[in-house]
Amino acid sequence: MAGHSQYKNIMFRKGKQDKMRSKIFSKLAREITVAAKAGVPDPSSNARLRLAIQNARAENLPKDNIERAIKKASAADGANFETIRYEGYGPAGVAVIVEALTDNRARTAPVVRAAFAKFGGNLGETGSVAFMFHHVGEIIYPLSKASADAVMEAAIDAGADDATSDGHHSIICSFEALHEVSSALATKFGEAESVKMVWKPSVMAPLDDFDKAETLMRLVDTLDEDDDVQNVFINAEFSDDVAAKLNPPEE
Image 1 (cartoon, rainbow, N blue to C red):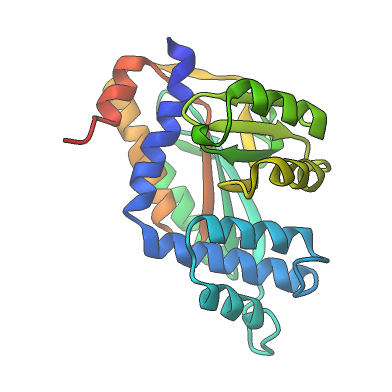
Image 2: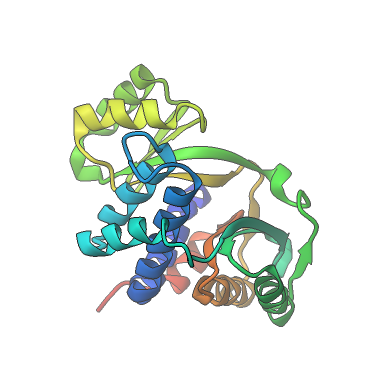
């Protein structure tokens, strides 16, 4: 079923990200530093820092790296990073949202714009595609943690808006409820694989052309490889055939 392809998209991205471990570590550390600098360097009093550390641990970022990233926030000569969102369209009219943390807009913007142009996309104005997404909290657990019914029941009791189980358990909630919901679920199921804010598409763009899908993923890869880019979200819904070709089984 086409509806299942969204998980296949995620698995394809995860497979690519596994090959970029050092870059992932660097981006996780940057988010920790920025979160600590934006608030206080104590995760118990800084929700953003708490989430950044939790996600870093889920990716096995060493404890020493986490501590160094927090200390870096108080360094007098530390860079001042800002969060920037870029929006545009990729191949086949797929909507793309790029989240960046940068200390130099003049460096980041041309790189993002060039990536869109190289792969047949167009960088638009802020808000040009965001209306096709919901900015929500997402909590991920492995399927082995509990049954779909148990996760759904716990998610509802915790105040989540939705829960799906397709490849993993995904619990969706509002930004305001993210800490409360994640804490309640952690009490029941233990620490999640990830707890973060995501842009979840509300309008999907069906994509059954392999060449265009491959070009789209090359665009996403190119954006991911930039040190300033933290996250890339797309609203593509690959057909099962295309998803299988993008993410062939390991031999």
